[in-house]
Image 1 (cartoon, one colour):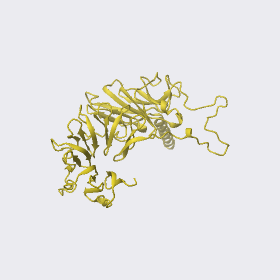
Image 2: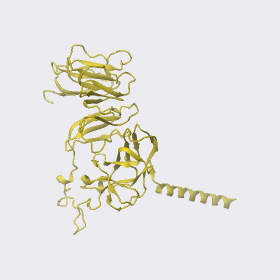
Image 3: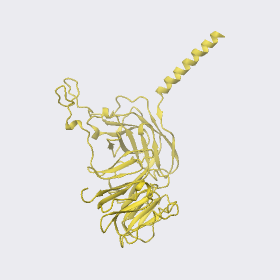
Image 4: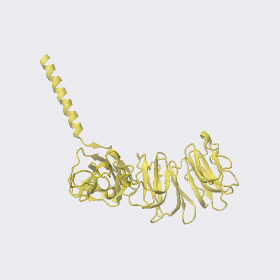
Length: 412
């Protein structure tokens, strides 16, 4: 019996070691996600994702993303700059472009980041071809592109690109001139930091429009794809909600949204041109270019997506469960939505006051008065959010969840 017990211990230990060994070689996989005609986002290991727009599918399909344990050091048509991922199921054909986003290893890119792209192949060894619409996010270390079918993909550089500037005579990397004590920092050593024409901060993410190309770039929380803008699309304005983002396309003036669509807050109306947009917690509203009226979509449990009919506005701001706008005829504020536990506080702006701009927070709204540029707020005074400094003029104002900030007009 003692020999049998020892044998069982050895057998158990061998099985355990085999299981551990196998688990190390298994591919990492994200959870399966069912997505249908309304679209959605599939998230895989390391932030790899697949953003499927509304109307790209006719029926529900189960998707998953797998990271292969071993990335080939060389593949036909591409120099890998990241891990190899497999998007399943194979054979799916989309009716619209979907956005594939993959992480890249900065150490394998060096100064060639502008040449990065998502490379796609029908089999893991290639040959690989770059997807169109490449967009590189240097902050999140991700690159994205468009496709209409699922396959194998990786972030990479063209096969003839050398990712590191190397002197072939001595085999050392060129990291800048030093005397042996300095670090050799030069302008070329510093990362390129993009400049933006506008920014918008949401629940846990931020998006901006790049000055150099008009594309959206986002960073922060991305569990629902709210920080994964579509590649290759230029925008004139952006607005971030709690876990979704919307923008006005530069090419046609229509709204385009990404991120959570649990309340259809990311499903704007088709063929409608907007002059401005505002994303709230779980709803979005915009001012139509043709008539100045407000159109909303998303959560409407408190009436926040039910603007008055036949009324034109010049300004708009969507909050937690309410929305406020500036009337075109007299500049006064008009709000609709949550009555805040039937008190009506955040719902009732001051009467007879014209505003130059408005910003709605979670349970309050603030605006800059047109007559004196001072801030005036209404709603719930959570943590002093309704207490702007007296006799201070502002050029812009922004209301957050329980606070408000503004830029002073006198000294910025």
